[in-house]
Image 1 (tube, rainbow, N blue to C red):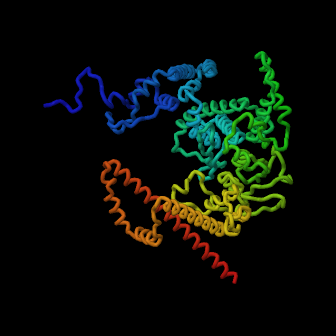
Image 2: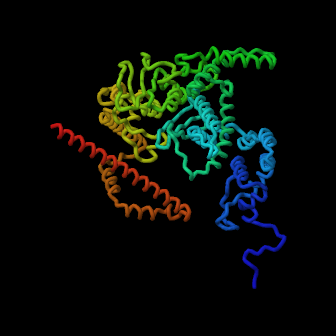
Image 3: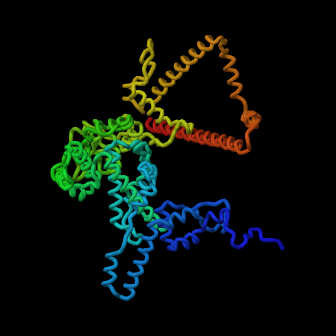
Length: 601
């Protein structure tokens, strides 16, 4: 009888996948820790399971790379976990002996660990931390909205810490005008900011009561949250110090009691930034004098620079920002969007989200309740955000719009007409700024309208010499009419496009004549195009298969080309489905209008 298939002589080293990968039980034996501690170590150190090509121990095991396990083995955090586990055994022993005094003493002196060195190890540069900030922000915003439940080990202190970190991050983004995109979806509100050239996208849940289910392992999520809290604290510290603002901030206790933490942080941000700009740099001062000045400055911020009911304190823009921080063109555009707008929020709208978005684009905001910068009766208010079917008391000096108007203006980077967003009307579709309509192959009607409004706002659409202004888009009329007069704007844009095509064709003909070529007969070209378009799909597929370049491809590249074509066909079918749905909706609306007219007559 021959040797077994996987025979290995005794004493010979393992090779291949058997030497490179170990199962989870083998990794726990190597590290000599419990399963819960092993999970914590893997989460903190960024070690994740691998999928080897050949699973030596079977498909029902979880595999880890041996180098990752050895990386954890030499980490100081492992020794700290062992020390904590040994200390917990002492407490358990004292409780078993009913020595309550010793147990309380041991609990008061229990060792703890910090993740500072782990964060510095995983993120050598600040840009690395920013690049990996999407998941931490989403997780921290999620737990900031959860209720405190002792059964699931979700403590009140941790929820407050998450809310504090979220507000500190939002205040930095809003006061430095780093916010770029906002989209309100069913899951929550998606935000995208650009910090140091890195695009950071996170999801904040809606401010509603959250129902926790039993099919979620909150122990694993709390371990992730522990690491994300430490990471976000480091990032906020670095961001605040990069613009000469002290961290952690000291808030007005009166505003904290009124649950206006975001407003209090904004006031602290403005006051601290102004103080840091105006503070003279005295050379040769001792450290004790500097510490005394810092403490006096913080007391002044609480007692003098943060008075009660200071009007507009939240919206005071950072002074001398252009001289201290270099702003790019996108930041300047965001800063000027709501610059001269004074907006009041009704009690039924999402206050924190709108407060964050409007201030991030240079607006001035207030709301109903104590601690608000200005009251609803202020005559200088330009817009009031309302989310109810009707509005009772109406001020003629302001416009009443729905919350979607703010988000659509932010994504379009222009002030959109308010008439489609008035109270009681069905607003236009809320388009996602994260979708590239041209790449998808379908551009909604309202997206075309927004592009025309953007071109009109930038004065890009101008009449040619010798032409009348009636045939082209008039900027002021388009901005005034907006979404209501869409057909006329579309006709004007189509006329402009045809003129540009004729001009381009004329230039091409001139070039061909100069090079000695005769012009192509337009009628024959149109006939050839019609013939090519009339070819059935079967013949087109046959032509594609007979393409020499396709025949010379390798099997892998040919399969990739086929997959790309299938993706294009799938996208085309999706576009046709959207167009069919649009036609059905328009037909239903027309029939409904006819039915109403018949009833009235």
